[in-house]
Amino acid sequence: MSPAPAHEGLRNEALRAALTAALAGKAAALEDLLSRLGRGESPRPNLRLAAAFGAEVAALPAEPGAVVRLLAHLGDTEAEAEQPRVFLPVAAVHGWVALLQAGREQERAWAALAELAADGRTPIRLGALDALASLATRREGRRADTLVARAAEWLEHEDREVQFGAAAVVVEAFADPRALAALADSEAFLDYLSRAIDTIADAPRAAERSDARRRLLLSLPRTLGAVASHLNRDDRGADWLEGEFARARHPDVREALSNTLVRFASRGADPGAVITQRLRAALQGSAKPPRDPTRRRPGAARGKASRPIR
Image (cartoon, rainbow, N blue to C red; front, side):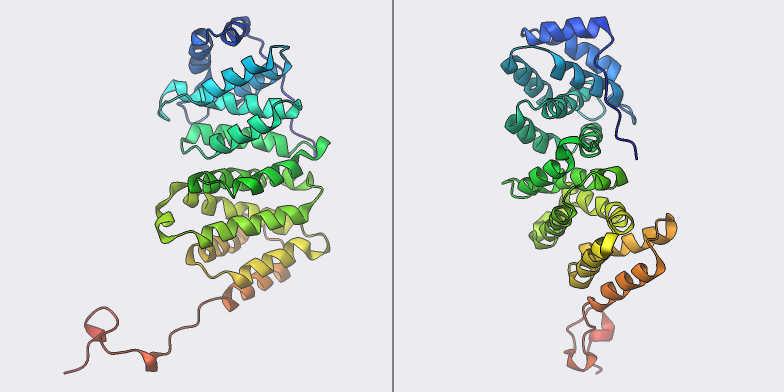
């Protein structure tokens, strides 16, 4: 499979001039142009513009501190998802990823990406997914493996919403078979997925109301299906999946795994009848056994049927 295309820089001279002014501390013109051209408030933000902005920023021989300050400023923009200015953090995400690809500002960029990937606003989440997927699908420099290693660190973030939200974007990025093919260490990725699943299952009950946790659950079926289909050399992917299905206890995790099986049938992504049957049997085997009706106390259940007969 071909790698994700490398993006050129900005071709719009007005944007280039505004970027130069922004690096000198006058960001108003750049913010206005990016907001108007970025279509951040639309269902389909202009991610090509965001990628071009990132490539332009990474190629500039500007003083490093100016670039970091500008990207941090754009990333901190307060705007509702329906407002054009929401595109500014989208541009920042691509700027940080472009710096990573250029080998610059590694620690600062990864820290910023964790926060932006976890952002609950849909345009920013789409931008983070696009940028991190472009990073993961490029084979040179083991960038997919580096993303997995950093994402594993994000699971230890002090903010649970960042744990869930960033993991949701990373897991979804690896639903792309090109990202899985770019991994040099698939075992590390499978271990990361196990930890992400454990983060869901081990969270306190109050976390069940978290939108970020819900996004992580929704991202699992597609990626698990890709694992079954594309990491099946020597049965590694299938064996790992069978183990996850066999140990699943939490109802939300079990639902996500069940949806994975449904996806096999409905999306034409079935990895094979034998593997599917193994997974179905493992999930059935890990189900909580039914309660012994002889041990139920009268009145312990709900409704009239549970009351003692008078």
